[in-house]
Length: 247
Image (tube, rainbow, N blue to C red; front, side, top):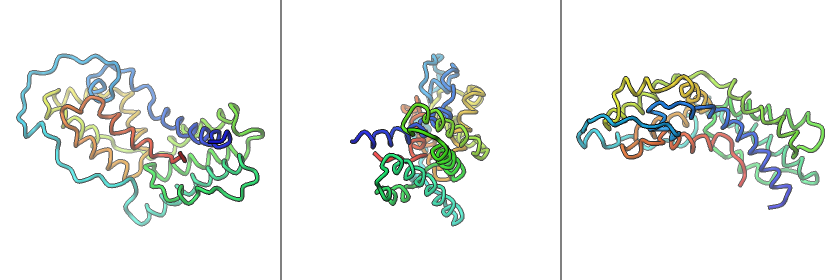
């Protein structure tokens, strides 16, 4: 990989990484049981409740295969494609800034064909913010100064995210914890601290319909043995698909 290509990838990753950090927040600061079970932070786990559920309850709940990330209605399809194209236009502009003699970005078509898990609002806001930062920045865009300018785009994108109801997702996870004899439903729900709820709202609000369906299916399909670290296990692959970057 050339130094220019490496710089190009690094700047795209800077936007993507800041979006992830903005979503993550400070979830690991809580010692709540569900965080210990599902997020995998360093919280200590209290003694397990002496419950011995039968095998039919501990098996994962059957679910239909999760659809690939993406929208469903025609209007959503159009909005999603437009948003992805906006993100690709930013990456192309960044590539051309690094390669002054190039007539275009050779991977534009590949980028446009990607099915992001990000909502059109978040994807468009991120792309517009990053492109504006690039166009108005005087100097080397592969510098710490530019990185500081573009790093705010992840936070700005989350402000554009729609408010979502996260109860179905908490319910899906708690139903598995209850079935596995870990905690009661009340204990499970009480263990979701305000910080964790906020971070989940940010993460889920940043997703499109396909990403949310994928997350809910993953949470419901958890086996008892796989409950620990489940939120991160289910969230991370979806968050990784919010913003596509060339390898």
